[in-house]
Length: 404
Image 1 (cartoon, rainbow, N blue to C red):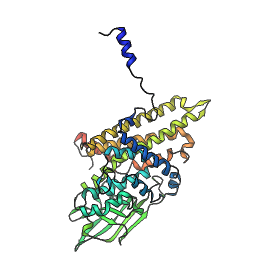
Image 2: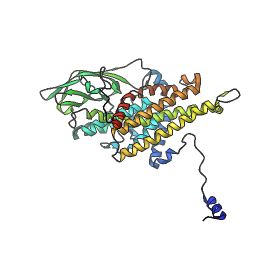
Image 3: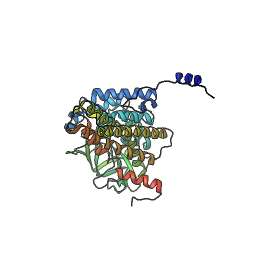
Image 4: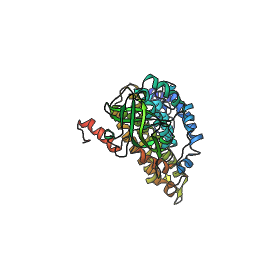
C-alpha cells in the first residue's frame, strides 16, 4: 500500500503534459513518423511559396500553370504511392499526409496531383503491360507528361456502367467514339486513360491527346474548383493501335478501383482544406473586436470553433487508421467510402461555419475560407456523391442493395 511519501514521490516523477496546441489539439502529427512529418513540411513549404501567393489569381482566372506539375514531380508527389518506374513507392499514409498539405492550399491543386497519380498513372501501373508502364509512367512521375481519366459522361455519372463511349475492333486497331465530361486536367493532358464499352467488356485505353479525332474543350462558368482545368473530351472515330488497350482488366472493376485510390487521397485532402478554414477563423476571432471584446470570447463563437477542431481531429485520426489498414492490405472499398463520406461532409460543414465567423469578410478572397468552401461543394459530389457512399455503407451493414 502506498503511503503519503510514496504518493508524493510518484507525483514528483510524473511529467508535465505539454501545452495544448489549438492547431493540433490531439497531437495527431506526433502519430506520424519523422519521415512523414518531414514530408508534410516539404509539401507545406511548396504550397506556401508557390501556391498560396498565386492561388487567388489562378482561382479568379480559372487557369493553373502547367509547369506546376514539374515542381510536384521534383518532390516525388506524382504517383508517389506506386512502386517502380520512377515512382516513390511511398506508403498510403505518406500519400495521405501529402494530400492533406496540398488540400490545405487548394482542392484544385490537390486534384492535379490526385488525378495524375491515382486516376491516370494507377491504371497503367495496375492493368498495363510492361511496355505501357515503361513508356508512360517515368515521364508522368516527373510531370513531363500530364494525364487525365475519362469515365464520367454527360448522361452517365453515378451510374458509370451505363456509359455510351464505345470502342470496336477494326482489323488490328480499335476505333473509339463517344465523349466524357467533368474531366480534371483534360485540356492540359498529354495522355488520357479512357474507359469504353467493347464486345469484350469495359476496357481501358491509353489515348494520346494529340491523336486525330481527340478534342478537349474546357468547361467555363464554374463557380467551384476554379484552380483546375475541367474539360469535356470527345472521341470521333479515333483510331488506336492494339497496344493502346490496357490488357489487365475487362470489367467495371478497373475504373472503380481507380476511383477507390482517388477517394482515399481526397479524404485526407479535405481535412487540409478544413484545417485552413479553421486556422483562418480562429485567428480572425481573436483579432476581430465587437462590443468591446474579441469575438473569440463569445460563447457562440467558441462553440463553432470547438466543433471545427473536434471534427478535424476526428477526421485525421480516422484517415490515419484507414491509411494504416490500407498499408496492411486490410482496407476495403467500404472503408474508403466511410472515410470519404464522413470527412467531406465534415469539411464542408467546417468551411461554412468558418465563413460565418468571418462575416462579410468571409466572402472575399482576402481570406481562404470561401474559396475552400466553394471547392468543397465539388468535392462533395465527385468521385462518388455523398448519397452514393451512403448506399455503399448501407449495403455493407444491411446486406441489402438499395441502388436499384
